Length: 155
Image 1 (tube, rainbow, N blue to C red):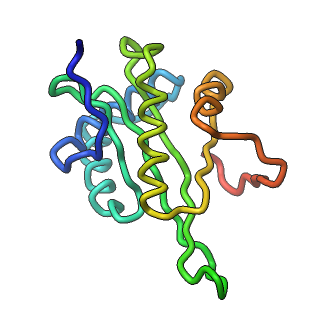
Image 2: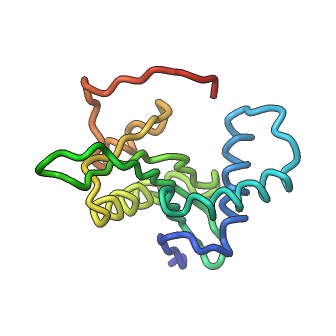
């Protein structure tokens, strides 16, 4: 059996997570990405600066980070009954190609949702590729007729 763990990222693993993000971008056809080393430096700094609002969960096989998912936590406007409200957005879920289709993505998503429950979040949203929709559905995500989006900037 493989030595797999799913847990919060450690600060010394942020560069490996940056490498996964780079792989994701390349795999999805991004061009003109610049230099990988520059990106890794920027990403590691960004992850440290945003650790309070952006929680990274990783999949580790032996000592290698092979998957990641980010939960961006957003504070919501209070109500009299809920003075401390927050919701989350699941972002950048990625498992290396050679480790896909074995259930690790689903385990990763469920771990992030468990963490969201521990944080007391009201809900978690995700913007998904059509290929990944079934994995999210198996983990409890549902389509919402009330969720709308407006693009305000070019991604």
